[in-house]
Length: 159
Image 1 (cartoon, rainbow, N blue to C red):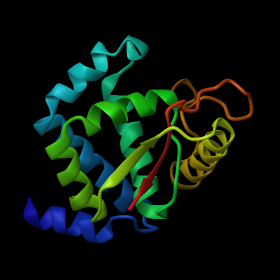
Image 2: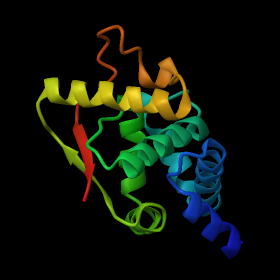
Image 3: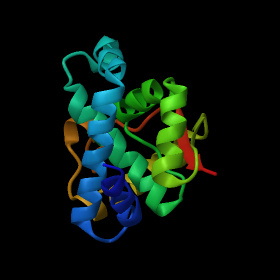
Image 4: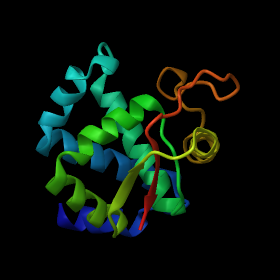
């Protein structure tokens, strides 16, 4: 298991799509095994009622992957942002997750101008498309329409 983690970490953030998928799958399985409370927290969120917590967590992991790879400010969708909030509240696990996978803590910065957040949201969707193909509209919205799917609470950055 340690050898596999080392291999995944070495291939982390590479241009190899297969390696990236394996990394994301490994991250998801670790959360599923060690942080089952996150699934319950997501199910208890009023905005996320009826949503599949597994899919939402996978989408949040993709968002964090984009921040880790591109080292830039990005804004998530509202649903992904709610999942990220719940993940951050698991402070020890979240800090270890960030340090292990991205060798730094990924900070969340609430606030910011709505126009800037929307521009960062569009940037997020473009990077998402580049890495993963089309984003699920029910989670990420359709950036061709002004439907306010971007998170109201702000952007994030890594330091």
